[in-house]
Length: 205
Image (cartoon, rainbow, N blue to C red; front, side):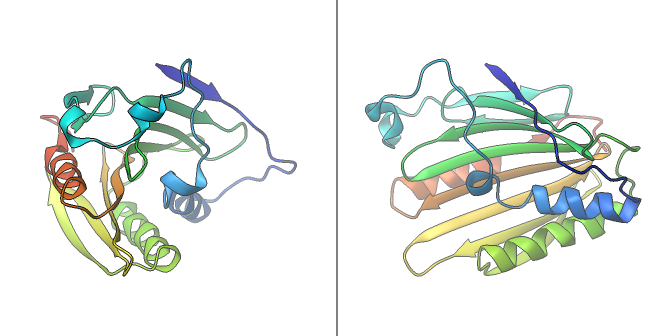
């Protein structure tokens, strides 16, 4: 299902290309905590919300328009945020449980052209630096996928809370797959399956 939300700022201003990169980076940092949950026609029951690895219904979630696929443990909630006068459009697919949140987020510039190859690494670093600071990150690594630059930021807390943010700049947009979870024998394999399943579709660069 898909929902759309819109809100305005009291003051609107034009963003330079540098300002736009900053806005994209800040807004893409911590989706599971700073973005409100999408509206739903039917809220999940207590039983559905409680994580049970034996009841997960894994399926491929593919977006041809954004050029990626990923496995999710049930049908996701889809949220589209278009802020009038803002610099970006945000589309997210999310599955939440009591101890795990799976999220795939696509962020596109709305008031300028696509993110360029030169801007990609700077944007990824801006996003990653915010994650490391806000979420008390434990490090990061860089990678390429289909020739597109990527960065993975890791969160490891003493209380067993973990997080992985895997972001790629591809096709002029940011695609970020993230999972936040309480580390347990049953949640760790689910988080790993989600992350390993992420793919860019053929031809995406």
